[in-house]
Length: 116
Image (tube, rainbow, N blue to C red; front, side, top):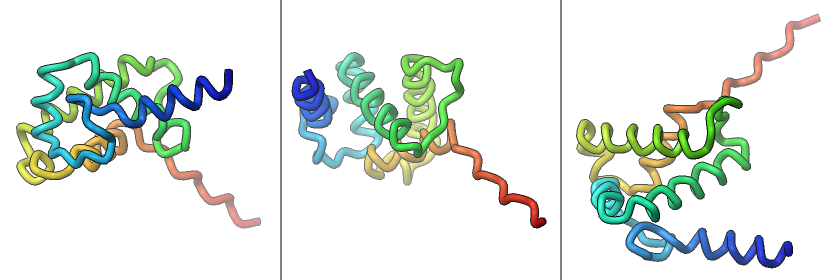
């Protein structure tokens, strides 16, 4: 069973919008256009990225926010930024995804303990 899960995770990591390999370096603008052509694959790509970031502790989703709703919020953020920020729009989609999850769900830094 573990091998099946690992194989599925590896396969999912290779799937991007338009069926291209994860090493594909598309711009955010191209990614958003591809999302318009295949929303299911787009959603899956964003979900995989978000799940990996969450599992590795890079983002802190609220406990009451489902992964599906989080992906929808991320895609909305990406669409707004694609229209508003030319540099982000022309930059790599993966960088824009990172910017989105950090803008939407940053982890609060632990406060340093008070000196004793």
